[in-house]
Image (cartoon, rainbow, N blue to C red; front, side, top):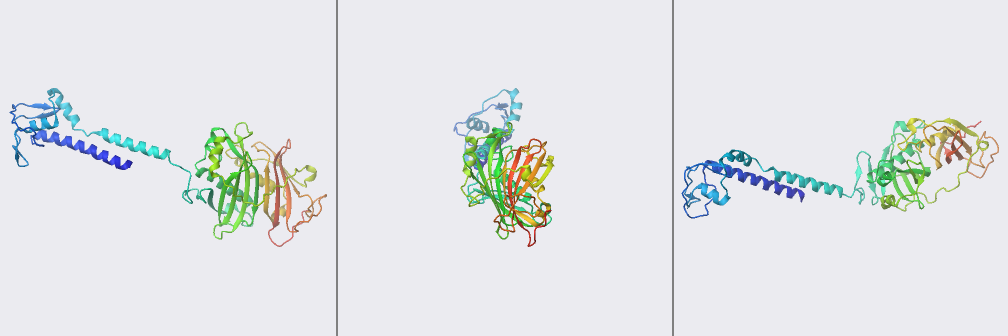
Length: 434
């Protein structure tokens, strides 16, 4: 409709300009351009006369017939009567004739302004939230919305720098993919502010998301060159939290590779203290909530604190690198996994793979902190070569269970508690940890 109106206005403007030009040309040549409405003959004295900037020779005579009909009067009389021209001083005729020969740009400019205003109004009123399955995506982020726009889906190819010695993706790679999918979910929902996954209302209040708890369960690790498909969605978690779940599948076979769930809370960017979720933020994120859960029953077992006398494996002097920081100016939560693995016996890493891990984040870690990583077999289990007092309990003989603690080295403040479960990579025995 806007385009049609603009076209009509432009044609109207052009028609007016052409009409004025034709009248000016006809008057200068002395040719009649329209019929005379008055039947009376009027004698005109042969002297030059200016009509609204048009210099007309009074000696020029028009034809007495127009379209085969005899009329009285001259071309000047006809033009004067029908167009309504008035006499003007001779000294202004030259300047005005030049102005009248210019096109009328005002109509064209008004048309352009109308188009711009209409386009701006449509842009601001556009609803960016997708309403239909697969209706919106991003070619660069390779993600799209599915299942009534409540689930965001994205594919990742496993790169050569994302695998370990056994040619499969590492647990850090999987966590990075989960995090990237979550951030792109917020971005393509039209909610992203200037923070790391923060919404517009969160950015106005200097609020950021921080993860409080996370559980990852791996069925199978993808190999180099595989393409994985990751679904993510959000839901409520208590009165002051948000739950985010992930489901990772093989894009070719559609088999499930990984399940994960997490709980997020808000923290003030300036005070670094936890904050309640404002009503304005709830209004932004609640339309995307779903009650769907990735786990039938989450691992809610309590994570016990480790001490020096109960931790046979301790790795000290761990320091963050500058590249470990994210845009929120603290160590990214994925980095904690690598620090946990630092304190595990090398034989466990060589012969086993992590298939289940639960992480409980206690506080953030800054760029100047020095940390310690503590690891112990879960109470009741025996790892060959481990010091007493660990005893065998009724668990499958081919799985290993560990508890972990990440803390500051100077004041021993807790950063992270975790529990990990491992299974053999192949049918071979665990090396002697001694």
